[in-house]
Length: 596
Image 1 (cartoon, rainbow, N blue to C red):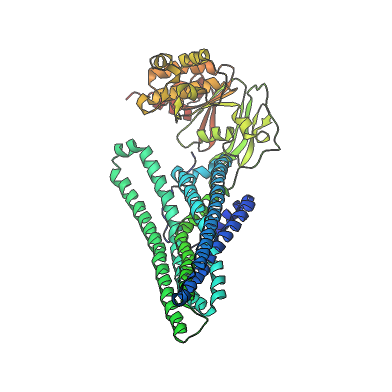
Image 2: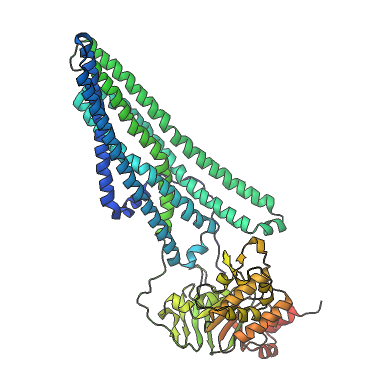
């Protein structure tokens, strides 16, 4: 079996890295026209917002001038009407920009999930050997959701805030350059603090996403095997491991949230500081009878300062989700950019009317480059033979089957079916040649019928009855309220043996020209094993079949028995011949029937 690498927490948090965000931007390039339109609407909406304070300044000056001579209500009404129109147009433009941005981000998220799903189908099994299931699930669910939430919320706000930020600076300098400098300089303090916080907090956001994947992997592993944990009394040990991962996740989460949470109060302080300085400098101008500044100008700058601090606050708020998205993007693109299986578009060989001759020619293989476990495996097997592969645990029996089906690529040598190298055929074409029944049962949520006819059309109830009777399931299915349409769930409470029988029936329905049985009866009782064994004898008639078994009594009628040890064939022959040799096979066989 392939070596498994369990992901565990590392020491120091990763350094801040926003490079993954660039990849998201490139990923969205097909939506550039829509993004450009959203940018135009954002700029236009911000312009409408920026014009408002200027009109309010005019309104204030009109009122102040009319206190002595009388207020011109027509002028006041005209200015107020203009303000209403400006703000209404700004609201419509902002809505259009938000709508476009939301649409683009959801399309991007949908495409991202689709690409990940397709990518997983192109990844070699080596990738899954080195990554826990929980970590992969965390990338597909948590990390993609984090990116989606950031794109749908922060991106829209950032576009409009940036346009507002630039526009406010322009209007402030146009109105009064001295007050503009006062406002901007006071706000620069916020940028300095923001940069320092970002530099420190990003590494904890990266570590948080990694720790979340580690926790999901641990939970998936332990909860799936909950009964084993209890049976071996390992609750305290596994709880300690969980507590360690949970404590690390708490630490990285707390530090990232605390540091990023400091940005909002800092920006609020900077905004209030700007108000104070504007009044101090503005009043100084008025006291010195400087006509460049009026009460209306001060009021306008108070609004400008608020508008100026608004995008800064938005930047501060968005940085938290952007940092999370950066860390999530890094993990997602690690998956999307992982090395794939070699493309096979140029392979067109398809075997028709398969006889079933199989040959292994000096096959060499190792799950890792530094450790070869199959050393020069060679065998010539004829069509229709029942081939048993036996040997101690770790001898390479299941590995040979994995290579035969091209789940892994050989490091050297060749495997041929009917004289055609499996390398010349597409992997899907090789898979279609085999029925495969594993010792690990796999049933999905759905009806019994859907599980039996998995990926095969046109199967009749008569065929289902015949196959289920052959494996000893017919009586059980007739007792169910809905028969073949009964939904498989926890309430049905299938035994391991019944699950195994269902997977065997599913393979029989596929009816491929070659058959692989990897400890297919390991989970059934002796009586059921006899029923299934009789069905297997019928199933293997005229078909080349490979049987991996530890119970040697089940393979006595095999045409060829390959005895493996340490990745090599050390003995070969039928049951009678191997017993007569009184070698390793005879020792294995006799040990199973020794009288205690």
